Length: 317
Length: 211
Image (cartoon, rainbow over all chains, first blue to last red; front, side, top):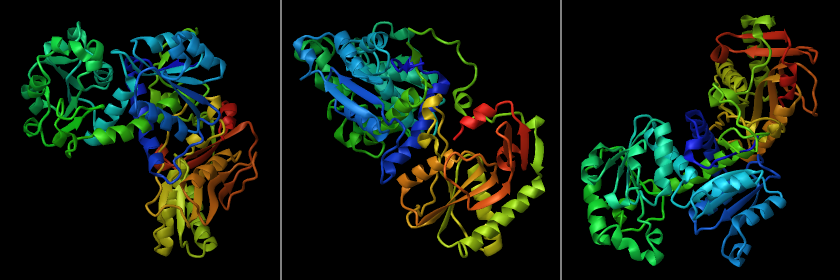
């Protein structure tokens, strides 16, 4: 039976560990001269990107290619979508061409879930609106485990625009499955309604939380989701400078972290806004590592979804 | 579309593990613990003889028991000739020809000794040689790691029924079998004791599907 990866909540503890362990083995492939495995030979993976993306799109493309799948990458600009075709028609067209999996990014929350109902192949959510981005959460967990050796009991602090962040939502779900303790830090205006029911603590005081953190994950303020051209940003926080002063990670704040603590950012980052350049380039930063790990984790997801007669992980149709 | 299956109580790792088919309890011993030790000693001597002293040899075991055997062979070679032969493991899961017939399996570890395989005399090590499909997959996996000077094959048991033109250079024991039988190799590191068992097989089909 074909399965999908739509939400980080689709993964049980065992599924998530299986992905991380598989990624650990697949990471070796990236260090070899011949960075290729025959595993998905003859399978077709379609990357369907309705929203701008650099790292996720290239990461999925590279992951599928390293496993020998045929890859077609679509972006909404320059496709029939700009002529008015609906998501469903686009999906059925791709299905008719014989795709085995669709990796989709869309500005609508829930678009991948709809897609999963319309097509026979596996659907992988590569970010839907402000909803979820499960492979980002997996690569973040993978990076934490590699750097710190464990996930159970790890104190993870996620700071910034939680309201618009699919990365935060997926991370909270996955990390709670894996036994980490998550604290969300943001101005009250940038926290979603109902955050109290999430499996995470909430704080408004970054300085109080930092010394008790093993991982600090900084998020970008998503101005593009704050009205046209970000003009409503003023409704969320007074000014970029004020935001940066209260919720930005600078050198002074990093000095209060525990010795082993790491600094993460899913990218793209705005240097000087949520993170100081010295911090982004510092020894604690895993930002570049996260990108490299993304390829291994996505290879693991594609292998576990498509590599056999049925899928080893994910949610059923 | 399709209805969800009932949640499996078995942990993912176990669910994906390569099944050990048949019931070892119903099987009869073909090699005892002492026999296994003697056979490995002999294979180590043969290896030294055939490779003219074991120069440039790299032992690569196919997980799980092939890796254990490779380590043991390296230890015996060291004991007999004072020579340190690098040993490692080579996972073949992603190169198997039956990947599409089953659920994706958990990967075993690939651990190539620091010197790599370029120019080396690689000896692949496995517990049982049967259809030859595992070895075919191992040869493909090896080709992606580099270019050995030559490749040889060492197996503890050759049970026949080849489906590919593959033969072993070092054989611990030839055991003529019928397709209905199963061969279990037990090693102390993995199974708590050393033995080779020949069983009437209830799960032969499963075993047969293994490359």
